[in-house]
Length: 206
Image (cartoon, rainbow, N blue to C red; front, side):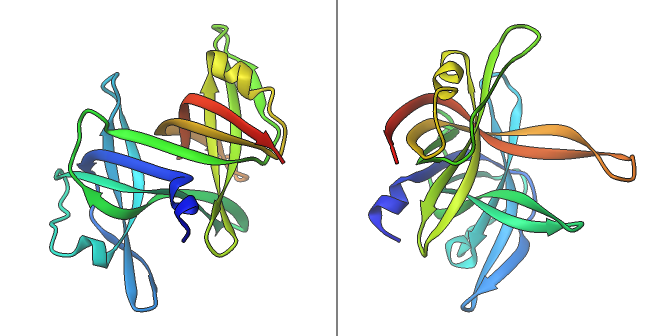
C-alpha cells in the first residue's frame, strides 16, 4: 500500500472493548478477528464501532470486554450477500494499537471521490442535512465506499458537489439504530454506520 493510500483513510479510536473476539477470516495463514469498541460522544451517548484486527497485532495483549483500547486504522467497506441482497458492511481495519486517548476518542479523515449525487434535506425542525457516499482508493485497485452525513452550512456546501468531485473530510464514526421493514412485513432493528462530518474541503473535479 502506497503512502498516499495510507493517508487518504485514517481512523483513530479510543474506547472500551464491547464484545469478545470472534474469528472472521484467514488470509495467507494470517487470522483476523472481529470485535466492537464502545466510544463515548461529548453528549454522553456511545457509538458502537465494528473493528477487524489481525492476530499478529493482537499478540500478547488481553482483549477482554471493558478493557480500554486505542487503535489506528482505516474505515473499510465490504459487500456481503444477505437474503439474496448485497449489503454494504463497514468496519475499522486496525493497522496498529496506540495509547488510549480520551481527549480524541473518535477521529477520522478520508479523501476520496463523490460517487452518488448528494441528498440534501431539512428536518421538521429546519435542520439542514446532506448525505454523501465517498469512494476512497485502496491498494490492488480496490475502493472503500464510505457513507457520510453533513449538517448545517457543511450540508449546504456538500449539496453543491457533483459525482466525481474529489473532497477531503474530517469527522467521527457514528452508529445509528434504525428499523427496517422486511418483505415478510416484520420490522427488524438494524445498525447503520457513517461518518458525521465536522469539516469539509473540495479539492478538485475529475
